[in-house]
Length: 284
Length: 284
Image (tube, rainbow over all chains, first blue to last red; front, side, top):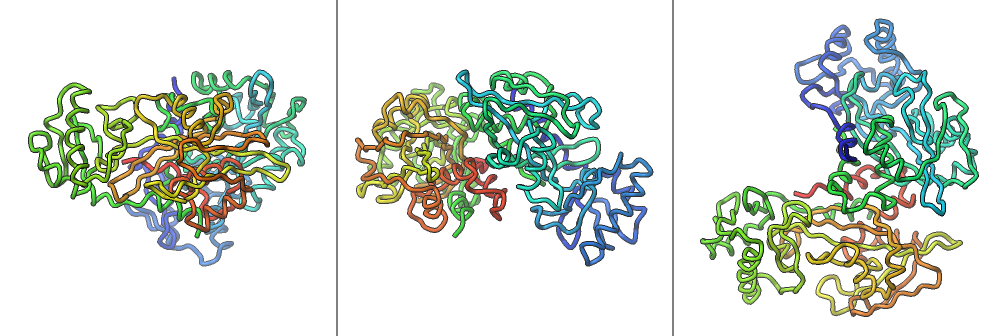
C-alpha cells in the first residue's frame, strides 16, 4: 500500500449517488437518493425532485429551522433510519461554520451530507533519535473504529464552541493535557476530504495542530474515548499509515500532512504532488 | 488588500486563450494562439489545428527532440519572438520532472506553457520577540522584478541537478549559506499555481523549504541576484505580503504558506480554506 491509497480512501464518492439539498438558493447538503425518499414524508417541508431537494417549508428564523429538523430527526432516529442521535450540535452551512443557517444533531450530518468541522492534533516529542509521536488506541466500546489507532487528540467542533475552547476541552478530556500546554499547540493548516460513508456523505474539514510535548509528558485519557497511548518513532508511525489499516481512516491524512510538513515525505515520493493536492480535496 | 488577492494574482489565466500542445497522445504544454501561428512555420514538425497543436514530426529519441526545439527557439529568439535564451535546461513534461520527453531552454518554458519546477527557501530565526525572516531585495539589473523583495533563496530547477544539489548551489550563490547549514533545510511541501504571463503560460511547481538560521548568521549574495538582505519580524513580512506589491509575485505564496504552517494565518482568517486550496491550485 502507499500513502496515496489512504488519501483516495477518504475521497471515495460518486456524485451521481447524491442530489443537492437547497435552502434559499444555496446548497447546504447532499442527500443520498434513499434519504430523499424518507424526506418525501414531509411534503410541506421538502420539495423532492429527481435531481434536487428544496427545503421549501423552512421557517425564516434560525431557531425555528433547527426545531423543524429536530422533530424530523427524532422520528428518523426512533425508526432507525438514522442510527442514533449524538447530542452535540453541528452547523448546517453552505460554507464556513459561521455561515450556519440552523443547527443539526452531529450524528445527522452525513444523512444531510452537511459540511462537518473537526480538530486533529498530532502530539510529538523531539528526541536525540528523531521525532516521536504519541498515538492513542480507541476504546473497544467506540461506535466508530473501535480499537483503531488515533491522533493524540481529535474531536468534532460543536457549534457553540470556539476553536480555542474546543481544543482545550478535547486536550483535557482525551489526553490529560493541561491548558497551559494545550495553548502551545500551533494550528498548521486544514485538510479537506469528501467520503461516501454508511450514514451518508461526509464533506469534512479537519483543522490540524502540531503540539510539541516535553520529554516527560505522558497522556492520560479521562473521557473513555482512548484505552491506551504509545509513543512511537515517526518512521514506525509512517509505516503503520502506509502499510496497514490500523488507524481510524481520516487520522491517516492528519499524519500524512505532518510527515509532509516535517520533511519525512519528500518530493522524491512518486505521488508527492498528488498527495499534496489530495490533502486539500475540493468540498462539493 | 488581502492574502487571497495575492493567490488569485498567481492564478490568473483564461483557458480559452491557450490550446494544448500534444506529443505522443500526452499534453506537454499550452500555447497561446499567437504562439501557434509562429509554429505554423514548421509544418513538418507541428500540425496546427484550431483547438490543438500536435508535434507530429518529433523524433523518437530524447536528444534529437531537444535538438529540433533548440533550432526552432534559436530562430524565434533571433527574431525577438521569445525575448532571450537563458542557458539553463528545463524538462518538457506532462507530469513530473522525471517524465521529461526532451529539454528546452528555461526562457522558452512559458512560450510552450510547459510545467516548470523551482525551489523556494524561507530562512528564519527564532528570537525572544518571535520569528524573524530574512528577506532579500533583488538587484536593479534583474530582468524580472528588479528591486522587488524575494525569499532568502529561490531558484529554478535545471534538468540535470537533483533537488538537494540545486538547493546547496542556490544557497551558496544567493545567500552565502554554507553546505552544512543548507543541509538543515527541511522540505515542507510544494505550491502549485498557473499564471498567464507576458511570455506565455506558467504552470509552476515551487518546492518549499524552511531553514532555521542561527541568531548570528548574516546572508551574503555572491552571484549578484540580490543587492541586500534585511531581517524582519514575521508580522512585518506578513503586512508587506498582504498590503503591498513589494515582493516578486510568486514569493508572496511561499510566505503565505509559511504563515499558515507556523500558525500566523489562522482559521479565523475569513478566506482560510480558500487560501489553503489556492496554494495547491490544480495544474492544467
